[in-house]
Image 1 (cartoon, rainbow, N blue to C red):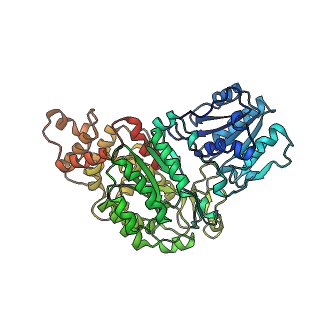
Image 2 (tube, one colour):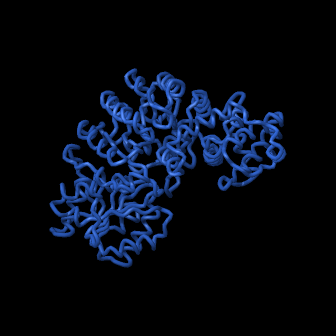
Image 3 (cartoon, one colour):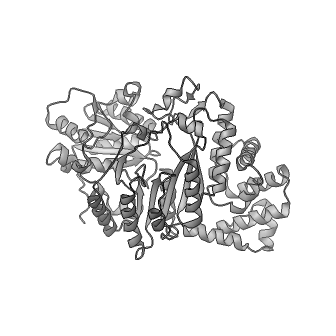
Length: 537
């Protein structure tokens, strides 16, 4: 396979700032693949892709971009990089106002007149850019010059688009999470999501798509994140895709695939295939968001809660798939009490991780129609998080923000399996963890930068002094968790036990550790990061 062309002095540079290096931009590769198809012959040869990360200094990014001496720079703008990219554009227009800066992406597809970055740029392509961006570049280079600053992206038939997957380099395949899509759009209308603006979902031609997946696999690709919003919407397609990976896992056991699934639709044909995947190969993101029927109806979310619960129970109990279930706090009309009930219901279903999100007002989403009726107040800065509403005041919202951060550190880290059971029982898991979260904040004033050993000691202190649990039982649980983590320091509460080696690792903890390790792709650190990146993206 010939690697994607690198142009020494490109006329066009397409670039973005990723959250981490491990993420590889699918959108930019679609642009590259379609430069000749929709911009005219020879345009791809004049285009180069550059990817940065948001942690890089804007001056460094601008220096690298200007060193390429392009005439046009296209930038992908998302909620996670708009602040940093605004600084980049500001510097570009200060240093080289002659270079045409073109923006695209979901963050600038709506409310463009309100954004500084749009005012600084020369052009903005809203919506789909696969066709409109190449055509704009051709016009900027060869004329006639475009008259409009804001250009509504053309949405073509998917059959007319060139596939982007040849633009992944061999290094991408070896080191990064590969994003793929069998379809675009979504038929559902959940008002917090940009996909609610789609009229339906559109599938790529299946044989063509499967040929592209096979080509990636033959080149050595092993990590695939499907960005389809509703992977299991068309069962025939889902079956074909799952069977493709299942067939190859027999000889290539390090394959890892991530899907986002509709929670209340899991027919037997899919279950039969899912049950055959070995541990560590299959990860599902299951969007629950809320178990409150009134809230679901209010935000136009259709979900059968009984079927959802049954499917989650089956996935956890009858398959080896790693399950991430999502909840959103701050939806209009949701109270602390009703959310707690939903959280407890989800916790009892035992997904491997509960992804605890706070509502964000994504630009263009119809969630804004509830702003007046429910006094929805959002942070004006990215990521536009809800600050308060008519049922949740600001102080409570801050408590839940801390809850979410601590939950990620303690529960989703997988390092406190036995201690977590002590912490969250008996009764309401949500209320127990909220009490721990409040206590942890009051005791430390921190939400970040906790060493593992410090967390062990804090958990011991809370469980024994606040909850007044038996000290020996708590130490035994924490010792088993700490030993299973592979850490080698000395938490104060375990110092004597670690020194004397008086307690052996309980069999249950050893089994949990083995299962957790089995979910990883290999012992290499970047393989571990693949799964985390797939869940977070």
